Length: 500
Image 1 (cartoon, rainbow, N blue to C red):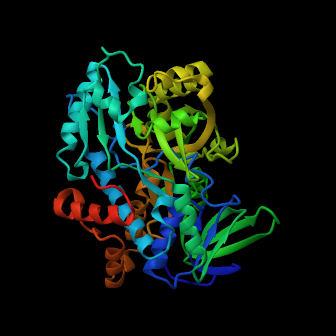
Image 2 (tube, rainbow, N blue to C red):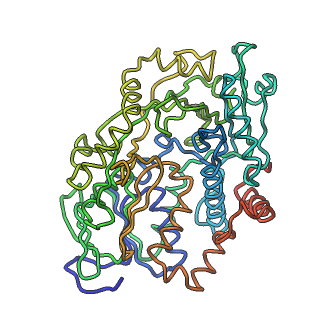
Image 3 (tube, rainbow, N blue to C red):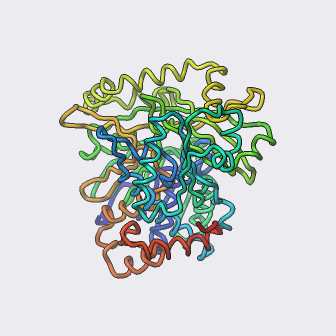
């Protein structure tokens, strides 16, 4: 990535688009690895972490695959595939190591301001689902990362774990649950704000609010980034050696504007969400866990129902949902024209093909949109039988854009994970998708560093620093029980979490 002349107001090393957890993570990693890098950050809203990273918008709080059943699908032969769950659990351990480093270096505040221990539980009912959960638990016990996970079918034991979930339930009902006390609740909004607070204090880092990126064009080995100040209307061009598009649902339109061949054929399918938020302090106080169940047939992964204890703005909260919906916006604060304007000649076929293959999803979303308050209460009662409508109110959650990509066999497929699209020369990268997102941000950004900063990433200097920030860097915790135990003990102490 050479630095040649370009018609711009300023030339910088790095431009980060979007002030969420991904940009914050990448920015801090880069400044730790190479302190003399210059970084410009552009956010279209007036604060950081206002979209998917915000606590009320983010359904993924401490995703570590302990309780999310969609990460352990049951195969046609009845076996449970744990590969994705183990990968996510490994990535979350990497995130915890990086956060521990930030705390030790004084780069963020006290750990209790963004992470707390909250048991992660899976709960199912019905003989077939109980058989699945039993098999899931058995398979996960083969991984050291799931050491300490308990399984029970005993109603009294389950009532001890989650009293509100069991209260009022029929004694004859076949139920089962797993419990992982090592689970956490992470307020990614709080963490993101602290990380940007650190970044802003560093030399050669500028954070601009109310700035919308309008165009991206590669010229003379640099990226000309045209931005508009939405308050003053002033436009300017900043040239950068490297650009990261981490704008959540807004990443796809910007990737399309970049014109890189690697971005051709991608489309997006927006899914909105809502929560039922408990307003009764007595009910909130009686539940202390993240309890996940099985998704309805046709439901997208981010719609896995869960009764979720959260810590938001220093207060304990209780949410249930999310209830899916549909909007053509790609961002919670976006435009209704986002989806129509994202459709291009290059992605029409993949989008149509993905749509035809996901008729069940469309049907599910229509049913969700048509739900009445009574319908939502009935869904809640499956997890909290004694729930009363007056104790809950509806809260709008964030907006997710699922990735649609080309596929030789189907023409186009709908992906529910996270996709990093990079140019061949490594000069620009875009993050698409949502799940499991924030919880694996550190692993995603480490992968991006290797793809876009390969020479520096392999240097002795960067390698030493990476191992200082992430002691397990380059090793698989799942394949090294003693290292996994050591790392967990260390992060448990530094993050002030409970030991298993």
